[in-house]
Length: 454
Image (cartoon, rainbow, N blue to C red; front, side, top):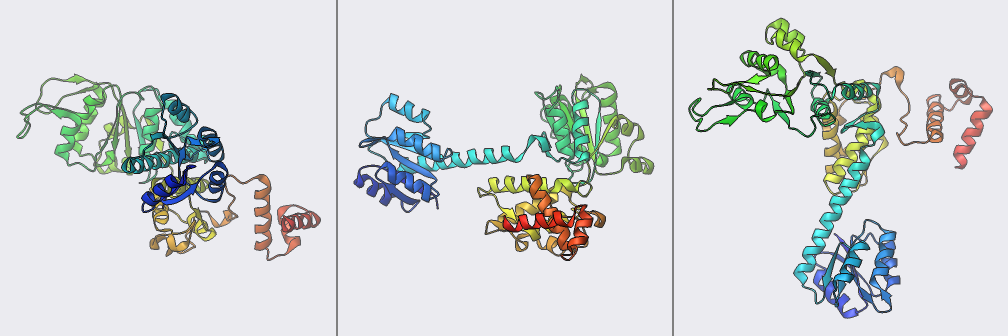
């Protein structure tokens, strides 16, 4: 339940407000500055109702002290003598809002709830901003692996040119994220970014959606419709699952690419368009061309600049970053404190091959946060399908097995983890451990003594 602190030097007001609000909030009261500060230090207070005049103490001074202790604390000021000057001073000092006595209970409840909603939104923005660290991400994509760094560099090179791009990769690898990054990092960022899934729409509807139609073009066409290509003039069109596009429509798309014009259904007039075309598929289009299900000329027109999104199992070093990101993301979305994964859960996640790639990892973390009752996500909180996977099905090759070092670990912490892991692996044999680590037995003894004392 939300914890509310009422600070007023009049006991009658504290008692009446407490009685009126105790059904909706966990209410604490304080009659002076000392009691208020003590309550804030001892309890996880979510919101404060603070009187502007606390006898010999100024409510504004106490407001500054409260905000110094808890910068994100939501404070609503109360006073019997409201003035424009005092309300401006309160807002400048960090108050969320200002109420004039006598208080109206419905107004108080409404304002507290709005303040808490604002606080939750502010916290979510802060958490999400912190989650996406610039050195380990690019335009919403998370990853520090060489494969992802190459994609970031490629996007930087092609974002401002009009050449067609074909993004390939397994489902769940972030093909649309790459397309969005190309658009929003480039010169067309202020224009439309239009997305259409070629596999999700029947052929006849797909054609009219892309090209539009004239009034009376077919039964039910009671008015003209502008197609996606025309609506996206100056921007980017992202054709997802291009491998599912019917052959007849492929021929019309080829004409659009070659002539940069579109002809709506039922019309004889063509319209010039300026679009950046990005297509994506999880199919092998070269095989589709060989089978005759995809036009060879269209394939080469689309595949001017190829980008392949790597499967998650190909970039294992990014898994810890993604786990941490999704822990932040879904905790914020659900209005919960961030949770941590137990060592067993980390081991399971870092050894899993993720056939569904990043999308599957996101679903696993969302599921775990939704079901977890405590601060730590345990094996019981994971989907049964993941828990039942044999541990032999690992993300890291056996030859690369090792100890997990958190991304924010210091060099000393990393060294400690490696030494203790190697010692455990060698069954406590110190000479073998020292030889394997390339240090002297004396040096190993000193390190172990240091770890035991710390």
